[in-house]
Image (cartoon, rainbow, N blue to C red; front, side, top):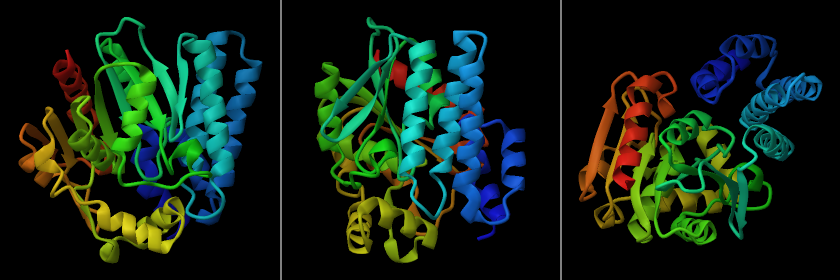
Length: 326
């Protein structure tokens, strides 16, 4: 895949993660090959860190750190090379941003997760934002912001094989074990979950097994994976995140919600885009149909993660999650 093709494929995801589209075009337009992706994005992130250090106010510094965290994170999408340095820098930059912009934000960690708890201490509910195969807690800021504006507390997390933990852990299909640890550490009786991409599978699997999940939403989540027909890029990413080809193949085999779906007792919203067509991936309509309290929101022109159609699903989904919990 050429650099231009890779940049086009990642464009709505990158801009949905908060990158300025014009800056994105300038950075990716200078790439000779996709091998230079990570270096170019890290260099751009470092420029925002430099601006943060020179900023005239804490607010401006925090905003520059926030932007830097997003550039560092998108650097980890590079198909080749070691992504862990960029993930570490994304984590560090987000910590600097929150220290300045939201000093009440609290780092919460456990054996299989790490993340930030944000929002009012007396919030009526807590929502956990669960990332996907090659995403992390720095990516879905628009989802987090939409939920925070609705008055709930939000925990953005990295789990096994995700974000800053990708260098030391591998993905696991029994994600409800991780969510159970998160709920224990947060010290709450119930949570809502929203999962994006593979995080949608994690959320649905958790809702089927963890009784303290009171509401769940999936966005571009797979109902089933078929390793043999998945694109090479997906197989390569999964191989890295699972720790080898056999582990990746076994993980893909276990991503199947046919049996867990009917066990989901809580309200469930499934969001799909009509242009989200990935070979080997069965989208979420069967999940919504099989879950006893499933609802389906289909956006015909939405791509993967619906970054090109945010107005068509994000406000509705944020309202739905808050309403289901409160």
